[in-house]
Image (cartoon, rainbow, N blue to C red; front, side):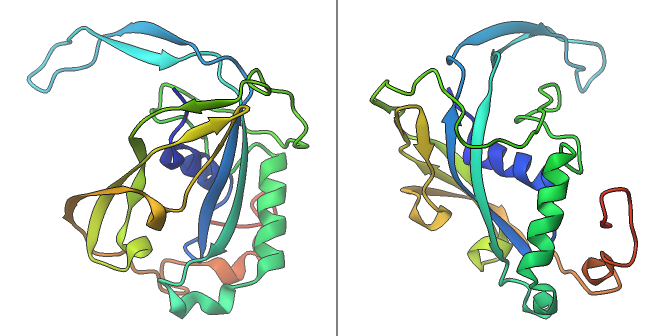
Length: 209
């Protein structure tokens, strides 16, 4: 009934991301009434042809997302790029331009649009009190986040207070499900990482990938 932590993290990372950063989603405010709609989809079958399926989507959504970044200490070799001012102002410029990549909510057929907010937006549930949602998916925990060579799915018990859901951190989630073994991706400066060159090469936003 609301976007997961993982979906919102993907939105924030579409604004700006580098391996030296870890975006932490603090909270989301639900601005529009929660409602759903069903749509018929004809997905392509693996053995050829098309199938018919019905999916339920959240409709007419609008969210106010609060997040911050921390240094990703899984990559100490990139610590020379821990420049708070640099990354803050790059992210700020990227927000003003609607992000660096085309964001979407969960699946590609649900495009999202990003714009800067002042934090004073009124929401439909501003005076709704508490709402409980039970055990729901929170996020994926990757090797770069958990310090282990494994991918896990995390679950938690969210509560909404007057339209605001405050997310717990990954290490505070109540349930963890092991999915598979996975090795962390390696980043090497000047090989597959160009973080230090962002002030030298411009791509229209004042930085490079």
